[in-house]
Amino acid sequence: MNHRTPILVAGILAAWVAAAVVGQPTKPASAPDSRRADAPPLATGLAGCAARGCHGGPTTDTAGKPLPPSTLNACTVWLRGDRHADAFRVLLTQRSKDMIRLLKWDTTAETDVRCLACHTTPSVAAGPPTPDVVRVRMDGVGCDACHTSPGRATSEWLDVHKSGTPADLTRCYGELGMKPLNATKVRAEVCAGCHVGAPAGDGLPVREVTHDLIAAGHPRLNFDYATFLASMPPHWTEKGTPDPVGEWFTGKVTASQAGLRLTADQATRGHVWPELAAYNCISCHHVIPGTPGGTDWRQDRFAKGEAGKLPWAGVPFPLHQLLPEGTDADFAKRMTKLNADPAKVAAAARTLDAKLASAPLPTAAAVLRSLNLDAAKLDWDDASQAYYAMAAVNRARPGRIPGDAIDGKLLALRDSLRKGPTGYDPAAVLKLLRQAAETMQKP
View (cartoon, helix red, strand yellow):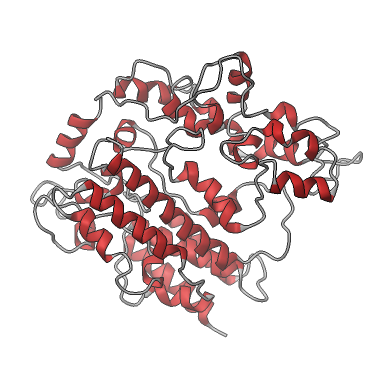
């Protein structure tokens, strides 16, 4: 699900909404925790993985030469370069303190389940803060968060896993709750649980970034699985040959499905509805015509709609163009209907989720065609999504030589987009997109 960013001067409606919503107490939506206060946590934490004889080996040899990531040093690589290791420390920053103050929450970020749900291993976000739980929380989004199936305890498979034999590993994955992460779909679903959001379930609290949180200063979620995966130092070795286009497409579908499931949950669990984070931010956050600064080109991105209706942020570009026409029409209609019935919105979300599950994998050529750059009229979000798609196609390009002309064009495009939605030149970005696509389409 694509969440657009607030842009430039907020309109009168947006200012009213922010004033009305931010500061309202929001009850934490958590999964029930029936475990005893003295029960061991579901997560073991780094202590179970970081021993030198397990996954805490060195990353250089005795001569100081770098060693490749492997099972021997996976935890060391993760600790040194993976941003998930810093996730809990973010809750201790001044920005987090300011957000709590603006939200008027009677708590602290480092103890509130709404923050801990994604800034630490989710299975220890709720429940009594015993010393063991606090220790695991301070690890950030640790090993257990990805490698243990929700609702299971790492201790169920850890000792068996230590033997390292194929039979025991098969048992860990098949019976004991260890999460198999070799499949792109499974891995993307794990990532989307926090980077998009997820309803409460299997002992985990709800994970979501609402309009309240964004208005208070939390970055909006703009998840691209393939790009996020490429930006983290791998602490694993891939099995088989990666398919960059398949990873990009599967990540897009998975993220959209996660957003739909969260929307269906928000619509039916008594959450503030409608949840404005699911809509297009620039429908409210834009320059008001007739005020200093002139007209805002971003308003031209969307057709004028009916007063009181908010445009749904939509299946992200260009995934929308790769789906059969009308795939998301019913859900979009219900999401934009004034005073829509939340139950019907939830039902439409589940239907679209099921449709996305059977979306066929496109070819690299089909992905490039879907961009339709000759007629495109892109805002920053769509231009960024086009860049992500082209970067995936480029990684799959036969005979690619890193640093060649196409890489150079994509780097220039990336640098232009890094200026953000209020600082980049849309015409220049579209020109760069067209140049890169033209070069990539040449035999």
